[in-house]
Image (tube, rainbow, N blue to C red; front, side):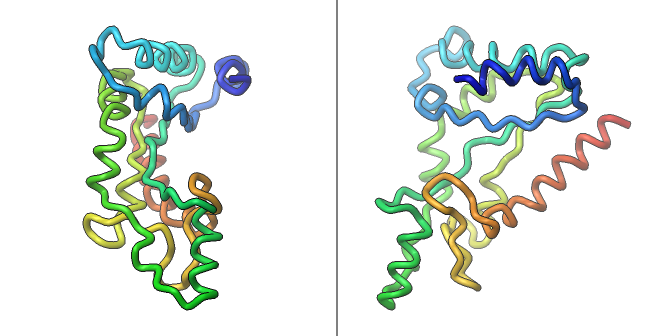
Amino acid sequence: PPYHRALPKQVQAMKPDITFVIYDDTTKLNSPVLNATTDAATIAFATFLTPIIFCRNNSRFVILDEFYPKPSTPTGMAISLQKRLMKNQPADDLKGTIESYQEKYANFFTRLDQMKFPNLIRHNTSAAMCAEEKGWCWWYNRKNLHSYFTDNIHLTDDGLELLRESYTKVLEEVIQRID
């Protein structure tokens, strides 16, 4: 909450060309949607974005990271992988399907589809994170056996590397729109 209150003020003061937003209020944004146009969570999210996005004098473009696929291990992905490797146990089940991710976050995507701001760019993080094998999102790098997650949410250097190209493409899109 303190971050959410401070961000619009900071953007208004700095007036950046680009603002990156990672808004991970999974509980509210992924709750069931009864009526997308009157939905309280959608309205609250739009209200949060409005001072950042709506006034071009604040931020010319806002890049919103969509929720990304993530594991749900009891001890966190890095520790789970390490324990398996130390015990010579297989790790080939440390992955999830893109389909289960899309189903899990369907309400979130319904809400995002209601956001019609011309300077909002949605960053599809799942495309990059699930590109290794069609239909699957791996939770670790199968070449060097490094986890993509420190826990079940935060990315390691290897996890961030998965997103490098997609961030580059998003920034290139912004540069084209600025010109």
